[in-house]
Length: 159
Image 1 (cartoon, rainbow, N blue to C red):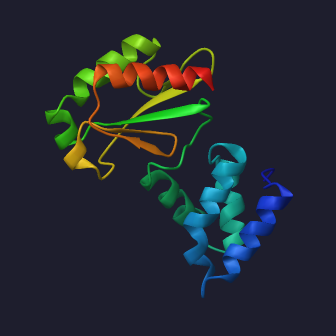
Image 2 (cartoon, rainbow, N blue to C red; image 1 turned 30 degrees about the vertical axis):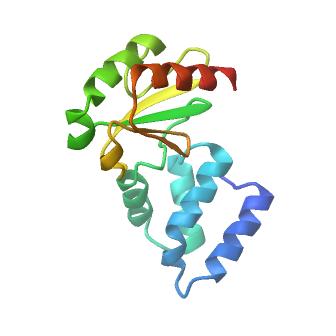
């Protein structure tokens, strides 16, 4: 196993583990620290977390693959996650996805050539009342229009 957290995040991990009565309870915060450090959660990182928390690798893998907030591969500087669940779909997310694919020149699950943007589709993000919606990095963007998408893409390309 070759994965290691940065010293700062490893210290933070040990602090987090101490907060809980069992190490298993620190699983999601530990994975979040890994993703903040590496940008995604690799197989080596899964083994590292399992070892640090003394839990089965299968439990860590299960959490990583269940929650859409964890990336299993390197992503672009910005991550657009478009909701395609029923509420968003009924209010136009399918057309939004087609528009994003055409504007970015990529498909869902791909990253632009310049490494600026990764486009993903996800199930419900919990903002059904303001559909269609998407998450860009950690920010929600609701009541989407094509004009809003253009502005979001422009901002992502700038930074």
